Image: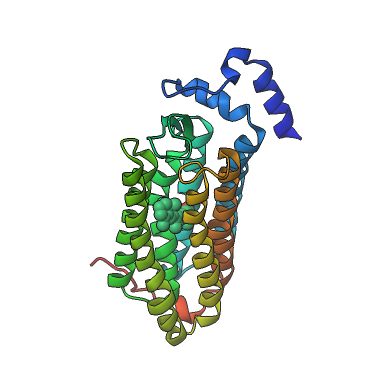
Length: 281
Ligand code: RET
């Protein structure tokens, strides 16, 4: 309701000329106005700003009595997921991290200027490492495997960004997509094989099992959306793709975070490290 009023207010203040699709030379303001001329697109961003904010508040509340440094590390990791997310969606909402790019020959919409939300791929580079750090700590894994997963998720996101922004050749777009997918499979292997086994031994198998399903199934949704969306074969339009990503974000970030925090708040011995954990001297 409040959103409708804000939207009406913004729309009323716009000259009709900006409501046509802006091109590659569009200013940030034109892109911002374009986003708010599409309710579906704008709401896919704004709803996530609200959810990320609520999740941060919930973490602060649930974690207020934490004393164990390892439990606190998990809480800080999950908080950083939402900290990155609220910034990421603010960037998208303001038009700062969205551009119109012309698709190369051979693409389904070759020659057309399409809206690309490249800020998403950029900011996943910073949010996905914190998801993996939290999962690795819950599984009771070691820093070699956790760092490996973090390095591969950064590689996956940066090559995904390259796939979205390459305009020289459609082949090269798909080549980046394949590279990114290979890096993704390394992460899937670490979660499904390495960490699943370790979680059983650590005693966190039950929680990890749920987190594993939400994470692996949810994460597979991202390349599928990329493939079906305007970056890939352009079967889905931009607003639908954006809602798809926003729904996946709700599952892989906020729901996963809440499950983790409800568990960590009780400071079970399986995830605690003792008062000496992580000391640097
Ligand atoms: C891309 C396209 C290239 C191929 C692959 C992709 C995978 C993306 C994934 C993203 C996960 C994002 C999350 C964000 C939370 O903040 C880049 C879409 C494999 C798995 C969980």
